[in-house]
Length: 129
Image (tube, rainbow, N blue to C red; front, side, top):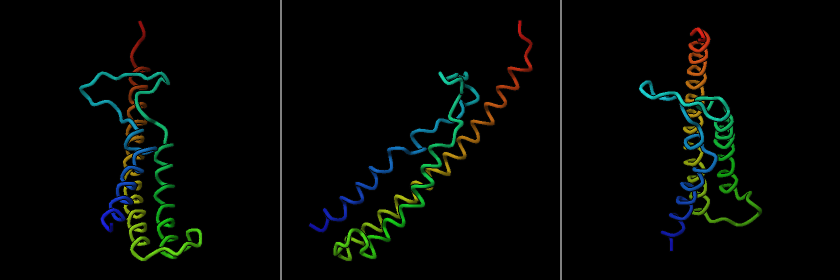
């Protein structure tokens, strides 16, 4: 029974990190040996910081969610010590994953904007036929 009480929140934490994550939604610039591919929005990769900002907010909010369970503020329910510690640990782990995703997302979007600027300079410097 205790095994189920620990594994279920950890599994939920792992599964909750996937939706809206920069790891999944942010696309970096193409590798040097690849041909650039313009998407329908006329970009080569993800230039906007929307997903990393969402990850940053989630990384900042999740520790407070865990602390609420530790201090029994979650709806006035009497939470056992083990359940509160598992919830806090899960929130902190999830917060760490979201923070890593945000850092990676901001780094990748910056590289994408630099790549797009180089491509634009190259297109403007080549004479048109």
